[in-house]
Length: 220
Image (tube, rainbow, N blue to C red; front, side, top):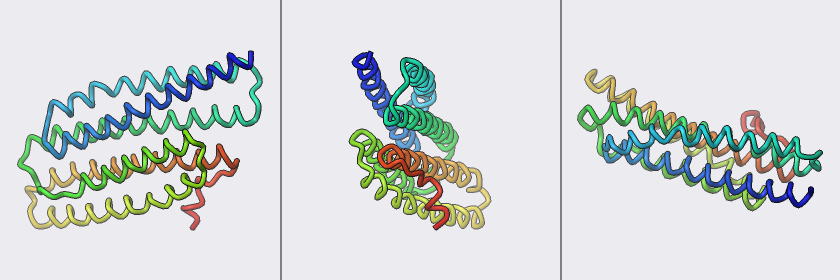
């Protein structure tokens, strides 16, 4: 029974990383659709959103089956509950990627607003944060997870900076309002992706140390 449980638990981790790969790929493609103005890539992101939805349902089922299989030890129980939260965050990252892709389709119908909008930098930082948070989960590295949580502020600052710039565009030229608003949505989605990556890092700390630090940054 224990060996069967351990095998199922290992399989859950493997499937979770497959889901993480899909989420990361969706974000990369969505940003590419914005930056390179490619409708076909945006359509792929939107079409592939159901993959993450299906993985969420499948992996949640696996978690529930693991909980029902036997009375897990406290450490196993914590791992399963954290895995369910990671799965939820990955699915929401996929939703944000789809949102970016939909805005890309709208933006591609208009002339480019600005060649050097800082969307690629935000995307790079958000994806790096996601990768590192998942790496800390796989390796059980609470120290690394805590370091990552501090990096979320940089992406928040970039979002605010970009919003200020886009507001100035709208004030200068009303014809830029719609495109500026679409780019604000893209920027906000990237900031939310970083938030979800931070959530995963916080869950790693809980998994390894048993301490809930989810609201400490807000208090400070």
